[in-house]
Amino acid sequence: MSVFQHIEFDSHEHLAFCHDKETGLKAIIAIHNTNLGPSLGGCRMWPYASDDEALNDVLRLSKGMTYKAAMADLNQGGGKAVIIGDPRKIKTTELMRAMGRFVESLGGKYISAEDSGMSVADLKVMAEHSSHIAGIEAKFHVFGEQADGNPAPSTAYGVFVGLRSTVEFGLNRDLKGVKVAIQGLGHVGMRLAEHLYKAGAKLYVTDIFEENITKAVAEFAAIAVKPDEIYDVDADVFAPCAMGAIVNPATIKRLKVKVIAGAANNQLATEGCGQLLKDNHILYAPDYVINAGGIIDIYHQKIPSSHDAMRAHIERISTTLVEVYERAAELNLATNIVANQIAEERFNK
Ligand code: NAD
Image 1 (tube, rainbow, N blue to C red):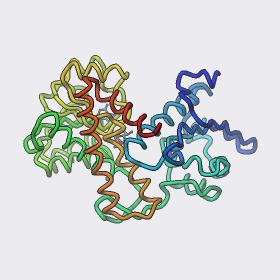
Image 2: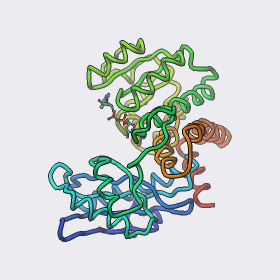
Image 3: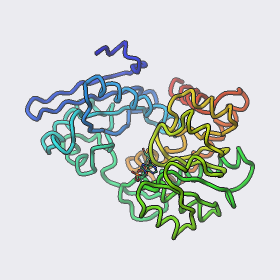
């Protein structure tokens, strides 16, 4: 396993390989960049097939967090942690405590939050041994409701305002009558559907769970589409809110939309797909810019803030996106490339 020569290494500041003999904990904490502030990122627990696979994942994810934080205007850098192992088989309270001690040992350069395979309860155990754990108590809610720590309402609202400004920029219209095809009606997608319905959009929806579709059809007058047919809908906007890599040469060929704006992480199968979208005159809202509402939420929970300040910060996603689109038009570049450029200017200055 090479580390400094690793293709994803990209000037990481700090990599910690953590091993606790007593509990069997094996973890890697990666801190990509702290120029803008301490690194923040989720701790993922996953049955990686090899140490190499875990290293690859943590390097890629922590770098992504630096870009996301910079574009979300946070005084925060990028980091991530991975625990190697199947959470259903090896997760114990003692293992979580050991992980908490490793996070603490970095002295606040890395702040840990929830990710796949981890729960708020696990983070609370980690917090017994570290003061650098985020997302375990919530004070603010994007609409002033009782905060429960779930960032999905903030993510969905950020995607909604971002989608609206993307439609204004790309199609020169508001959302009334705009046709949006939503892939995935989970925590984020269902809330996005509600915002869009209230704004007068016409919805086409899909999910692999029938009950989610039934709800959207009943409550938001949506038209149900089979999972594989969502790419073919004659809509204006495609909103991916399920899984990654769904924007690829095969789906781009099928898409009839003029805008892609959704919550899913890593929507582009490769960076080159951004150029392919541009060539096909599809305006792409870079995923880590439009879906930053959740990280903005987590950030506000740990600073002196308010419901309104948090909501106003999430609303700035739309101005950031317009900055990306204007520069992309001026330089004749794909929007994903321009988003990377702007993020790099922000965290390298
Ligand atoms: P979720 O698991 O609650 O929802 C995903 C939904 O997609 C589920 O209803 C699932 O049934 C559906 N789905 C899965 N495969 C599908 C398929 N092939 N076709 C159609 N539907 C399918 O997840 P979420 O929290 O709503 O997040 C959605 C996406 O947004 C994910 O990619 C996530 O990484 C990303 N994201 C979420 C947040 C957040 O705050 N929750 C923040 C940033 C990014």
